[in-house]
Each structure stands twice: as C-alpha cells, then as structure tokens.
Length: 284
Image (cartoon, rainbow, N blue to C red; front, side, top):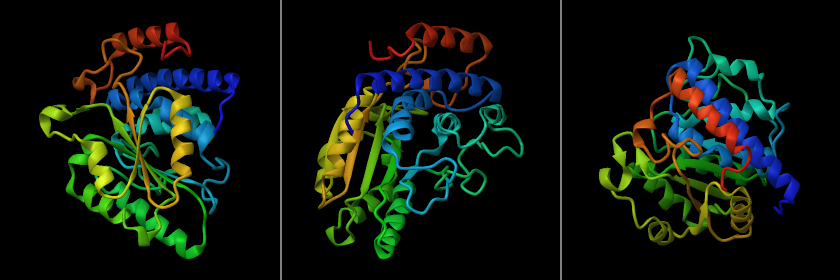
C-alpha cells in the first residue's frame, strides 16, 4: 500500500481535521471519551481513506472489508471518520449521545449503516470477527476483517479465548488483522498498574499469531504494517500500534483522566487552537 508524498500529506491533514471535529463533537455532546478517540485518529484515517475496500453509498455491500470496533467507547473517532468518508451528513455529528440519535455513546449496529457490530462491554469484538470469517470461508468470500481493540480490553478473559481460537490453523484465519491500541491507559490509571499486560508480543506469538509493532501515529508505517500482515497466509496477524492518548493536545496527552472525559468550552478552544497550529504535522 505505497503512499505517495501528496497522498500521505493529505491523510495527515485529514487526520488533524478529524481530531478537531472530535473535539467539537465531544463539546457539543457534553460527555464522551476524549483520549482514546484522539489517539486513534490516524489509524481510522488510514483505514477509511487508504486501506479499506468499502463504499459509503452501499454500506451493506457483501464484498466490503469489515472494520470492527471492539472497544466501542472510542466511537467518536469512528463516527467522525465515517462522516468525513460520506456515510452520513457531518451535521449529524451534533447529535452524539443525544436521545434518539443514531450516534449513541457506544455503537449500535442497526441504528447506523456502516457499523458492523454493536459494542459496549469490552472483549467480544474478536469473537464476532471470527464468526464473520468462518461464515465468509463457507461462502467463498475474500474480504479482509479488521478488529480495532484497546489494550485494556486485553484484561478480559473472553478476549484470550478468541485469540486462542483464531490461532487454530484449521480455521483459516489469515484474513483477520487485529489492531491493538497500545496507549497504556484505562479509566482507572495506567494499564501496567491496574493489570499488567506485558509481554504482549510473546503472548500473541504463543497463540500462533503473526505480530507486528508500529507507531500508531505514523500513517505510512501503519499502512506498511497492514501490507505485511496481508502477505501472511498461514495465521492471523496482530498490529500492536503504540499511540499517545489525547495525541496533539498537550494537557490531554498521556493523562488517563481524559479516558472518559469530554472538554468544556475553554478546554475545547485551547485544544482546537493547538490542533490548528499543528496542521498536518502531528508527528513533527
């Protein structure tokens, strides 16, 4: 998935605009998850504007790639990216978390075309992806299935049951790619203090997965990692994407207190000013 310089610059600028819109959307909602949503903006941008085979005008197209958001609380990033991609009008972002909105605080599959699963409780996204792949194998379909997950989600036992299942060679899960948002925080603090997760690489390898690590804010490196994962035919792949929660906003970065908190008006104005100053230079 080679990225020409102009395309890469366009993606980086779009990710910055998505971050700004996430802040505006969370301010309007008055609640929601800031840190993880901002941290995943580059990855969602890479998926929807470079990697995925999808059609916003035909969200139920049978041969589309599946993108499953397992850690549903970061749905502000997903919703905003989907709006930019043309799945629904940008104006609808103002309804986030409002009564009768299609944009609930956790994704509701039947409410919004383009959502693959309903997610809220952590852990089951990978199991649902496995079911989709088993069905696609029976149907002779060749789409890719991607799962975005949080690192804190790996504290759930059902996650590791699914990891074990996917690693079984007879199930033919090579078209499964999991992306772990390794931002090191959760609502109660840092993951390694709450419930240590390391060594993640060795754990996945022990379950027969191909493991990659990447800077989750480097869109080009992330796209290259997906390309490498797609070249592996005998096992599923996991990309451990190291991200900074609250990326681009100095008073949010790496602060777990922003895990489930939205900005007030003054904080939002400060955040937007910082992001506008950065432009597309988020990694500079």
